[in-house]
Length: 192
Image 1 (spheres, rainbow, N blue to C red):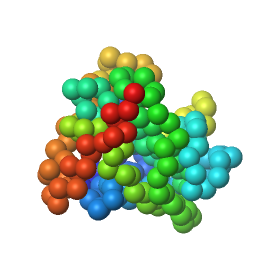
Image 2 (tube, rainbow, N blue to C red):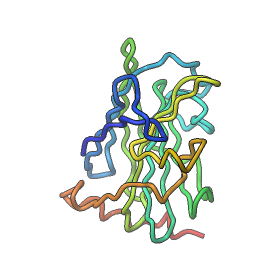
Image 3 (cartoon, one colour):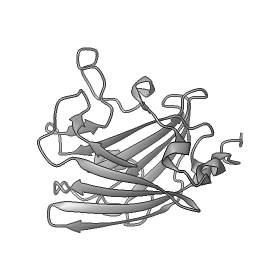
Image 4 (cartoon, one colour):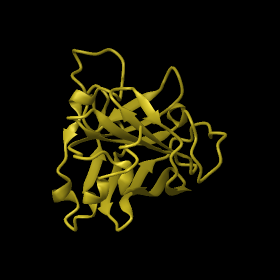
């Protein structure tokens, strides 16, 4: 599945090449490939290849995967310098687990960067049926927030990526025909 983030959070067009992401089925997890413009924002202090709290404060691409029936969702963040963040939520903004590890690498080539990640199937909530993708760059007051599925411009004045009601539908059986997505039945989500 190929995805292009072509709008700002409120639906306005962007003025640069769209972030592109590819979701692919792997035996051990979903493979995510990213191709994005590099805006030369300040580099995070976190170590490349490691989880970094508050990565959203830097140049980043994000992916959210939701079970809209239970409200459980996975938030993933990827930076051009090799840092990542994987979070699990039980209900809107109700952070349940953080600092999950995954395989992630990135490379910067001039004004573009590429990232590759493998997300274990058991990080995804059961009955996955919604998703959204985001990109953030720039520094205040010129911070830019982009979204695959924007929110209604006349309804909100600030970006918020946890507006779950605006996520797009996804049918895992259509995206991952080999059936590995069925491994989303997870002991992680069943923990107390």
